[in-house]
Length: 295
Image (tube, rainbow, N blue to C red):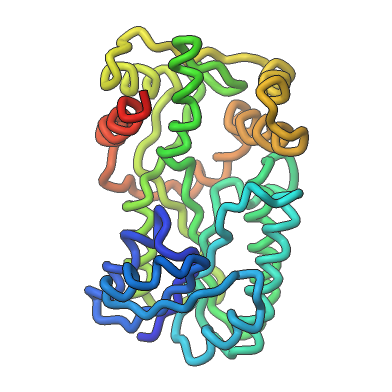
């Protein structure tokens, strides 16, 4: 099949594109960075350089594709991340409609079933709503859980205070996923028959914050590493004191609050997927390499 991959060769695209090529598909990758072109072509795919904010480029690239994989790239330079999500989602919707694409696999997020209180994840909800309005298009929304690599955001906190302290912690349960397991699930979904609207959750492991801290601590030489639970107010104030913009501080606080109160995972619990291959202890070794490399 002819498959268009958005999101370039980031954390998911990098393992996804070779899988699709190995399965015999003709893959085109949209990248915003020209220096990625040679890397993409060495993977056996075709590179198209441009922005997901360019609806004409999207439309032209999508034309003739059997499947389009859509995702909203991280762009923390946006004044409002939710509006960025909505804008890119509308671009995808228009490009899919105008190009005549009939099947889409969209990277969403667990918690996308909620219409408030989830911080930046609300953007995934917006994109799902936009795409679901398309007529005669088969859509699979991939809903991965919290990415393992998000734990790297706590590296400086661990170094500076010897613990993790956010408004989710202790015995709160976190559902975690590795990009390789997401890529494997997407590649598997490509080989399945399409359906009008489908939700597929992706999860690698599920552990308490205390267990996560213990696994990370073991690998970085801090066996007593603690993950403390603090209030929403204290967490937001810490972000603001660290210089995080007010709106982003609010979004981050909402995400962890929705993890703490269980709302983010409530639909996932009712549609629990099989675990992926990469467990917490596997990722803890990856974390340690990066953590120790930045000392």
